[in-house]
Length: 381
Image (cartoon, rainbow, N blue to C red):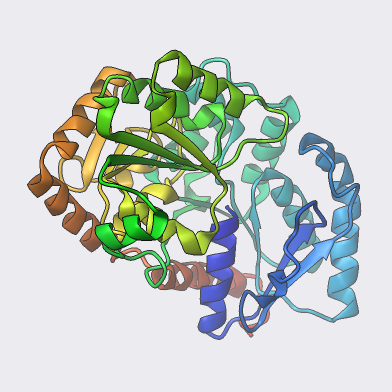
């Protein structure tokens, strides 16, 4: 979500649009965040303790909204539209748009009821589902990444299809590009092992346990599984997964790298033989698209928006069955066939090349202006 918001703002700036981004003061916020792009203003709003747990932040939303409106009024800022990302931002954005009498759009990225249906035992706070329902019912437009997300919003939230627009995510083609496998491995200090890559948050919904069990079905003598991403503090997920790998006798083949800066990610995608996305659910699946833009095939769960990115049998494989044997079979096919790996990589690169942030930004700007024209809002700056 952070990548999505930042890249949209940067690209809209390049198209001559001014963007204000409002977010809470939080622990670890970047001091150089104001340098996103010309005409992009990132404003950190104090609203509750910076280290407040996620759900507790909901109680501070009225304060957050009041401070955002004071900021807007003090600068006499006029907005064409308010675009919120995630459910708590949607709560504030919906009310801000009502005060300013401009359209409100929302992109959820994840939805509680879809998450709960995607993985047994997944539980979300009741207030989240109620808030999402209210936002969907009262927003001018809900932006979704895939037909699956659109249909789920209609089915689970009684969403109005006339207010839902499909706008896929994009990828920074200037950053995510093939860097050469040998060059990338040299840069990262990797040897000639077969490399599987996982990129994402370490949490149950991302299905990393499936990848570890899958790796145990492969020949581990020349296999390296690189895990890029960190776990929530105190979650215990990282310790559990390390123990799982050790219990399966592949602890030496699985390397947990922690968080990696965006500018370093292309080296990892380029170094990998295959990128694995074993998620229980992905509203879009940006990792798969980034990997493809680097010319690396993807093996992914057939869930959410992933089928809109990965072309089965052409740019990788989609697996309907979430079991280690099924994933291992597809991975072994790619790993054992260099010609197939290269052809899938070329097809992946070509497919990703049609999904630039410029195309996404232009589509969203057209929707903003369309909705604004119905409200007689100011023209885009």
